[in-house]
Image 1 (cartoon, rainbow, N blue to C red):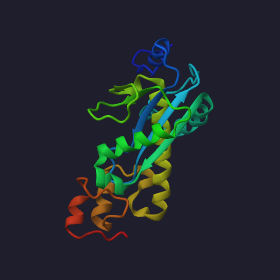
Image 2 (image 1 turned 135 degrees about the horizontal axis):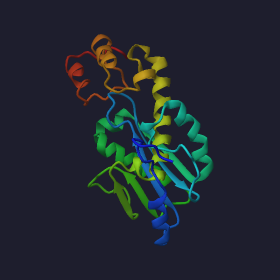
Image 3 (image 1 turned 90 degrees about the vertical axis):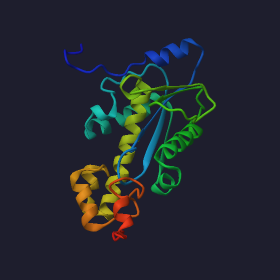
Length: 217
């Protein structure tokens, strides 16, 4: 029973309705890492076998890192197919963050086996990522269970990448802030300069590139 004040969790109702329309393989797609100053943007896609009974499944932002780690094997056990794709800073700088994110989603869709026949994607966009029938859903990770699952896969993967990078560049605190623009991270950029993993066109980074302050190589 949901207690008063609790936020509603994502459900399988959208996937169930689409199945009633004749669609078999419905992929939920989400990303992690649009706004950090450093690191990749990571996309993930999930096609569930049927109505998955995963009690604590929720939008990744509503969960602790420990809860996400616990849910990960349950998601993988309940899905027909999943895919994860990381787009690094070189592509982010070349394409811009929005197009890089869509490119990552395209790669996720291509890697799914079986291929989906309908896409449910978190967000609002005017760009096309596939010729497949698609519904973009604002805050979809709070409403649709397959999108919520994809959000967890993307978040867990990106967090691991940032923790690995933190071993090489411990000054920036990426094991805690995951590259997001925290006070600690921004002060570290001012003090130590910019690494090859920083997004040089992002505010909070580009000011120090223009000053020639790219010393953390």
